[in-house]
Length: 317
Figure 1 (cartoon, helix red, strand yellow):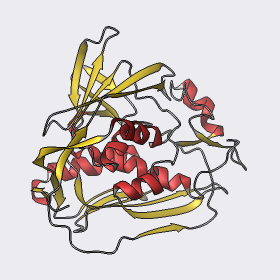
Figure 2: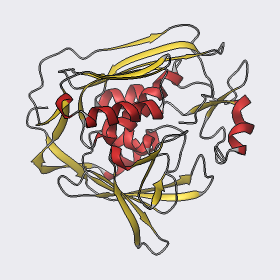
Figure 3: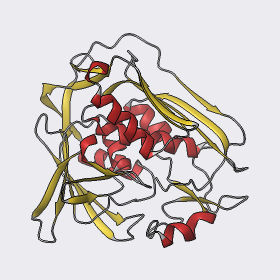
Figure 4: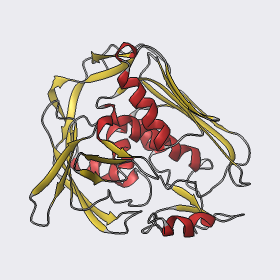
């Protein structure tokens, strides 16, 4: 990334869809932003007036139950931000204003691909300022029982290593390791959909979640089969979606990361805990500008252990 400049959108673009948890129809607009603006969420009224504004930052996370929620002292501003954040970070979009007229980012088809397509429609343009990064210089690890997340130094850019294990015949153990670039994000991560188990639907509904979930936007499995007529997009779509969520959650560092993130049996809560721990330990990271990229063959390892297939995860994520 030697000489890399910050980017923003060339034009404004908008998408409309329903919130997977709220079930409400919402319109989301992506607008160009100035250098060093970062990713800024604005809640707007029907007439386009700005009600509130928060910068996408780990300090703005107000909840991580079933989704990543951003807000401030006045309460939540928008929920389910992770798929959009993943698309922005995956395509190297540094500065953007996100206008939203409802309480939740639309789920679209359950993946990040509709946001990738919207960004392609808007186009990207370089800004004058060099891109800045947060470089991990000391390992940070957070564990919760048999689940853990860890950020460690990695000189070749940003890498995600995800492992999941479900006591379900269609999933079992799955693992994925990928160096995250715009190409690998598009081809290997972006199309992976949020997932959940059919047996959990009633419990989620009674708790006020997944009110907008359907086979159009969620990969659903029963005890023995995938319920979506089209089946899986990847043989290991479940672990790929967990990697997608991790990319989105870690975008809340505020700047792109240089480091490797390993998540084992994790989710939004653990991703947030690891990032919070990193930012709290100022000896574990530093801000650098557009570093020299060391020559390295492009590579990734997709490792599926057990029976690769579909499921409906414990959190609609």
